[in-house]
Image 1 (tube, rainbow, N blue to C red):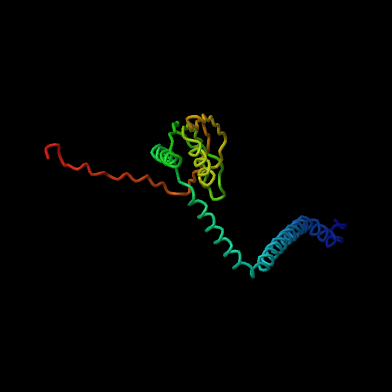
Image 2 (tube, one colour):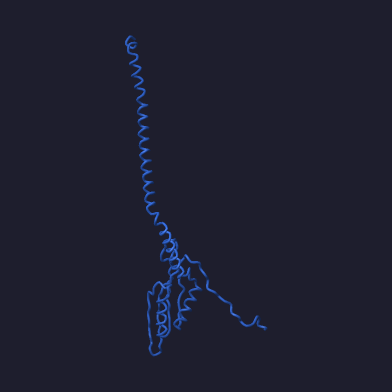
Length: 205
C-alpha cells in the first residue's frame, strides 16, 4: 500500500498512456487514409485539368472540323443517292427490260436475292444482288451492252462474261454474271405503273 500511495501518480500516468495508444493508432490510421484520398483526388484533378488543356488547344480548329464533317455527310449522301434502296422483283424485271432496249436483244434470268456486302460506319449496309443473264443479240448489240454496263454506277462488278458468235447470222449469245449494289440508307420507291386507256368503258360501247 505504501508503494501505491507513493507512486500512484506514476501509475495513473502509465495507465493513461496505455489507454491512449489505441486512440493514437486509430488517429494515425485515419490520417493515412485521408492522405491517400487527398493524393487520389489531386491525381484526378490533374487528369481533368490535362484533358481541359488538351481540348483547349483544339478550340481554334473546331469550326474547321464541323465544316469538314458537314462536307463528309454531304458526300456520303451523294454516294447513297446513286444506289437504290432495294431491287424487288418488279424492279429487276424493269432493269432487265431496259438492258434489252440498250442492245436490242433478249435476256433470260432468274430473280436475285439481296446479300449483305458491307456494314457502313453510320450503321447502314451495302447489299449486293448477283444476276446471271443469258442473252442473245448481234455483235454490235453485245458491244453496246458492255459499254452500258461499264458506265452503270449500280454495277459492282462483271464477274463472268461469255460470248459465242456466229458470224454468218451475226448472232452473239452467252452469259453475263454481274452484281448490283443497294444501300439501306435510302427509302424504297416502287416503280411507277401507269394505267393505259383501253378505249372503251365497257364491252357494249
